[in-house]
Length: 278
Image 1 (cartoon, rainbow, N blue to C red):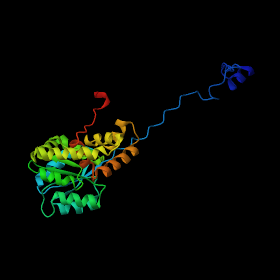
Image 2: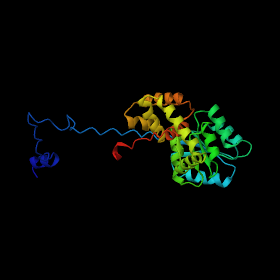
Image 3: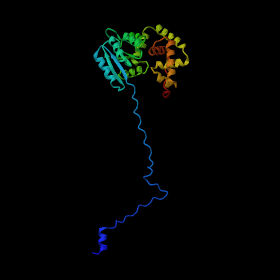
Image 4: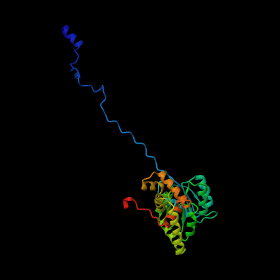
């Protein structure tokens, strides 16, 4: 082995590699500018949960209370926060829990439902009152109208009516179940044709003092609509409807929407059907 061969073995030549191709003048290397990508859409905010309607149930029969609670539990937007066995306890629990709606039996010991409703409306007007009645208690229904109750339901009615009534009253509307309305009409009619005619004439006279817009609002009160529903129906701002409702109650000399609804029915003012039904 000569000296040149030994040198080649000791210092081998580096392996041949192809040099990297230079980027053309108009080509930007990929690593200098990030590739364009469409920005990811922002994650939508979690929807604001609807208000949970807090309800108190008052009835001296535990089975009735359990039944009412079970029906209301079918609506995830309703929560029963307290139960009372009499009207006095109902008033105390309303003060403690401040529910949106109090569902009261008419006949209860110590303090009956009508007296409890009057006290709740006097001291805690933010709590709406729904009365539970049975057939044969028509006089109680008429008395309850004067104490501020906004909803009237028959215990033997459909469960859906209980949920609908609680939701309507929580939304500021009046609710009379069809059976209750029928009983009230029958009761008024039984007082004699002359008396019923007098009531109708008196109602028409009271309604005559309203403006056309107020009469229109009253007709929707008679249909049990809330301020928001009336606003959508009449294409008005809800605050404007609220002002009209206050004016209607004052002009008719009634304390609540349910009483105004009775006047509307006695005067023969019926709410027009929704536009989609015309």
